[in-house]
Image (cartoon, rainbow, N blue to C red):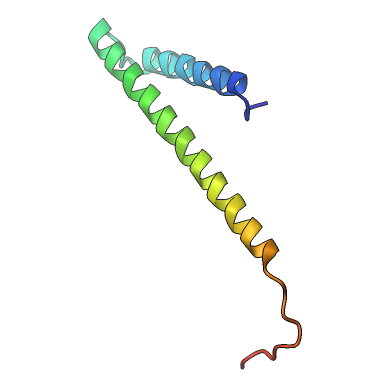
Length: 80
């Protein structure tokens, strides 16, 4: 579910609602200016985290593809 656009959208808003709840609970969101700064920061953190995970997944898939394309050399002796 989380791999599509709708899943990312739902995860983003669930994350933002969680930030608001914890911000209110711990008293970080006392005024509008502070709340906006916290929400913008949280949105940037979410976007950077999501893009990092996407890039890492691409790199992992690329590495697995390259390893699967290599033909195993069974006749080669192992060095000791």
